[in-house]
Image (cartoon, rainbow, N blue to C red; front, top):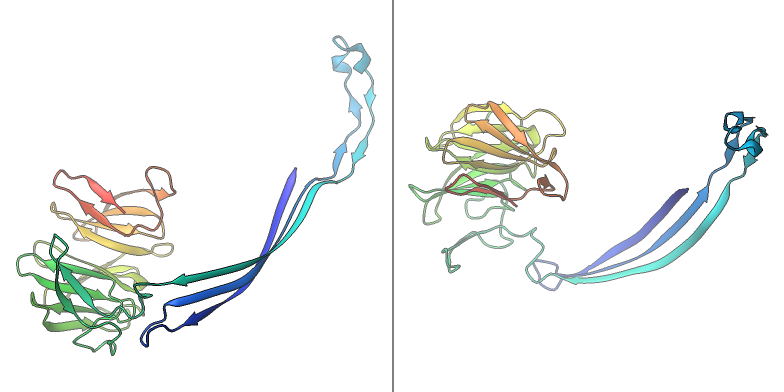
Length: 287
């Protein structure tokens, strides 16, 4: 049997601004058409002999005549259905999240860097713009920010949230990053070297704590899509590759040691890894 589903959807989204800086209420209206058909395709019975069965079944010791069985439809149905949905976003849609929040381990709010919806772009010293990742260097409590979903830079703040300096810019040269959405991950090793994931250029760039370029290496071509970095206490760089659904282990000089994982929802499979951590016993945790 052969079955085929053909589906088509046509719709639109209407957005209402509840607050001046952000839209929260959205209505989605559309229609879907489904056509589902199952059938037996045309089949041919060839002429031949089944005389070899004669000792057991004498009645079958005759020639089989050729025959054609035409295509036969088993079922067909058509469905036309409207699609209506309404969503209300209590916290905002993320496009104006231009700030960083600090909390204690108990969840108490401590400090905020930047203001919601206030970023003026890549040279703003007060706000970030959809920052992708952060790293706090524990010995100094300095904060390094991969400000890369809209901007293309790394920003350094002191422990009180004061802007210190930044580096970056659009390009593929040393110290530059691919266009929007690409400064996506950041980690610091015991020697205070900073590893930045330049996602669009499919590479890691290494800097000193003042933003001086030191080294770089490539993760290879498509489908590589490096998403997250983690440097473990034993001095290895762990990388989540969203394109291949693998976890990669590198030495800090850029040597690939091994990898594991594949796409899937079964134990050991990955789909859009968004967090990694290692405990004191060396167990590896993946979100």
